[in-house]
Length: 281
Image 1 (cartoon, one colour):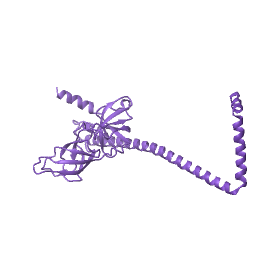
Image 2 (spheres, helix red, strand yellow; image 1 turned 90 degrees about the horizontal axis):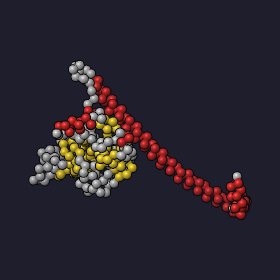
Image 3 (cartoon, one colour; image 1 turned 135 degrees about the vertical axis):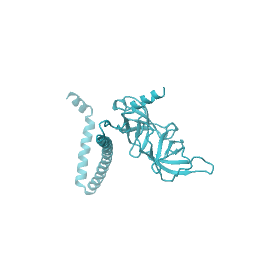
Image 4 (cartoon, one colour; image 1 turned 30 degrees about the vertical axis):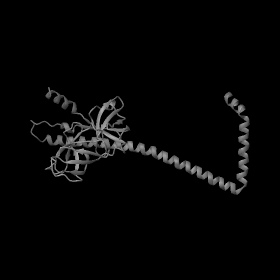
């Protein structure tokens, strides 16, 4: 209270001026129609602009939270579908002789972890993405990353709360792809020129390739299950003396619009890698 009185005494002249100014304005606008009307119009404009701005801001934050909620629901739905598929296969296996035990196939023992892209680059040869999920969320190196459109990249570094992803548009990235039309396989690489396109290699000239053909993951990479969309053939060129096609692929993921992604946790991956390391000894 003492501080309040000190404040009033210190600024008493200013406060008196503001009070008298307010009284004068009240008499002006209450007795004169034109200034009153103009004042109301201006006030309504200012208030309307304020509410419009506030509405836009609130809508923005509401939309962001709504997007986060939808992403979480989509991931939970994907996890539910995966569990349901495994249960159906287990039910089918249970109809087999007792000598064949029911189990979940390793390539389908998956869980999806939702994550938000908090930093990224698209203009260098070594582009990367930073996600807001890390080791404490179950993220590990070499996990595949996808979005609603298709393949995004592979996790290459993990801290407690963050992870860094090498995306398709990094010249160190490669993934095995399969044509939906004929099941032919080939590796996909990025040439560092355009973030929208990559190149499919090692497709022999006897294979039928058409513009618009869809490419999906082959399942030969331990980071991605089979059938995840990668892109479509934009152009396929074959010279008279060429043994292999020059295939330009429009990527499914739009790297200028990435917001939320899903990290694929393959729970059988550790077992697979341990076995493969033993085989390489």
